[in-house]
Length: 226
Ligand code: 13P
Image (tube, rainbow, N blue to C red; front, side, top):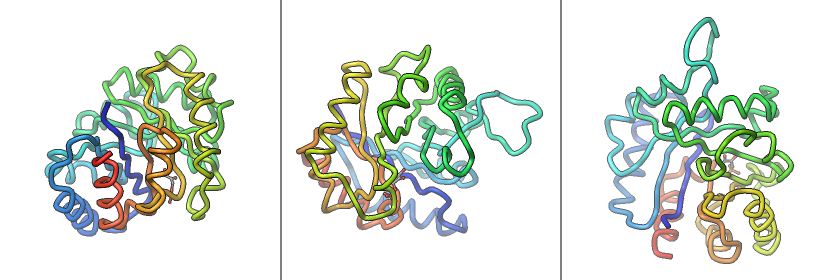
């Protein structure tokens, strides 16, 4: 099975030009990858332009609303994202839970609408207790799970490979045998080996390091060789 590297650019960069440069530097540096699926998730506003260059890189959004259209000012629907050339969507990220008060119930609705419109969701969880409610009424193998401990996000701190492995094992017991499970939180080119080889994750969700083309390329190239 292919390993997954999901790049979450969060609210970066500030201009379309910077986004194009970043995307193209990553694409150029990666060349052909064989065993890895690379998914870049930029802010909504850059998706349409980046879709023109994507080729081997897939595109994902960082959120979507659960209604398809209507009077929901400021929201973007799964149908709109699919139409732009998106194949993936990150849902339930801890920053959305923290700053935008997203609940497991809301995330469950978003997951259902993403699946209905043909987007593959990457469901972020901070702990295993969030899985059941988020996945209520959803086939578990249809969703990619990304385990991101809050204390590891943007801090440079990471769980030990043994700690991360025990979480991976716990999560895998709660999902389907073929559900893809990723690790996220301060991943870089040096520590990615631990999460894949020692902890047995199927890939990683990368934040800060995905804004540095060299670092992201090194992460992907390492994983692609495994
Ligand atoms: P960092 O890699 O910057 O810690 O961010 C992790 C994350 O939140 C990815 O979604």
